[in-house]
Picture (cartoon, rainbow, N blue to C red):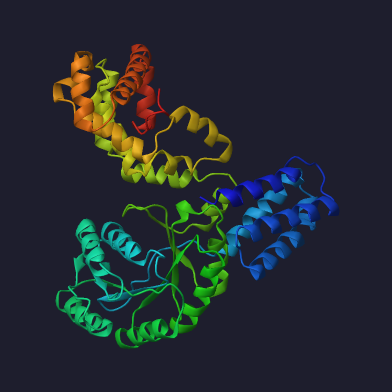
Amino acid sequence: MFDQLTERLSSALRTVSGRGRLTDDNVAETVRQVRLALLEADVALPVVKSFTDAVRARAIGAEVTRSLTPGQAFIKIVHDELTRLMGEPSTGLNLRAQRPVVVMLAGLQGAGKTTSAGKLARWLIEKEGKKVLLVSTDVYRPAAILQLKTLAGQVGAGFAEATPDEAPLAIARRALGEATLQAYDVMLLDTAGRLHVDAEMMAEVRELEAAIRPHERLFVVDSMAGQDAVNAAKAFNDALSLTGVILTKADGDARGGAALSVRQVTGQPILFIGTGEKSAALELFQPERLASRILGMGDVLSLVEQVQEQVDQEKADKLARKIGSGKSFDLADLREQLAQLQRMGGMDALLDKLPAQLQANAARAAGAVNAKALKRQIGIIDSMTPRERRRPDLIDGSRKRRIASGAGVQLPEVNRLLKQFDQMQKTMKKLAKGGMLRNMMRGMAGRMPPGFGP
């Protein structure tokens, strides 16, 4: 996330990080480099100017000159100003209204509105315990209604049936009646997008807003859209009086300009940030944590929270007891660890939250465990019989060929997985002898993904 911006800012701040004294010259040069880094990241020019002016004003004041470590004090100023720029920590949606609370999602086509509607429904169901109805008024994009219906089934939300030949306003009104009669807590209204802002699009969302009177009006913006995101944000804010923003595709954005611009342009808070394709890949927006990630400091708190939410504690404790009692770590155990890693978004999602100086070492330790590789490894283990998973020593040449054929992979991939497993098993046996592994796994609650563990 924000790799390019992180690299440029880290490079700029390294020039002052170890200095015992800051001068007007080196502060001015560092601020200039910070300005260039922000402009290259597609941050809006007015935002860059106000940010660098604030950093410069604080850097030449007593706050830095009286510090024992002026360089570090300067970096803290940059971190604080980044945090301030992005607004307050999100507490989620404002649902203090008469049921059903209507939440409208608007934005350009391709920004991720429909996917965000599904993610938001899951978040409301799992975190807030709400009964949610999903509604699509996008009658222009082929299969948009079907896509949202599929997502509703995946996340456990209700869905208001509609057809592409209906008027968006008629769909929304009928859905609101359905939500009222069936006692839904929240109705999420997914609106149509266009490739660019146009009069017809704005007239439609204004008409929907006037008729349905949504309590929350959220602008869904693609973080990779750069200056287009800023221009679209202005147009939608003028049309709808937005109440919040959802920032999507942050995991694929190397620049990060939209995250730093859209808050100031709209004057409305960023409520959620989408960090992947899965329905669970939606986080409450935490500006201080994001500022740390942008500056290469990592976001260990979010990593810990993610592990606590998505790791099955009971299974982790069971594995810790099993290994601690001297029983062998088998391929069924490895499959469970791989599946847990997959649920957390894969190794890339975890590495992204580590401090920059640890990422390279962790990546080398973890190896090439991307999402595709995880899926293939799980497929290989699934092609084994239960007995083979418990007794890997039974897997001879003919069994390997059968497993490779069943998993749809080449034989070397099966050999590679078995070799990695063999190394892990030997190391665990050595550590288990003195009780060291049991203590380690108790402390970690079995949460080490493959590669970070023994």
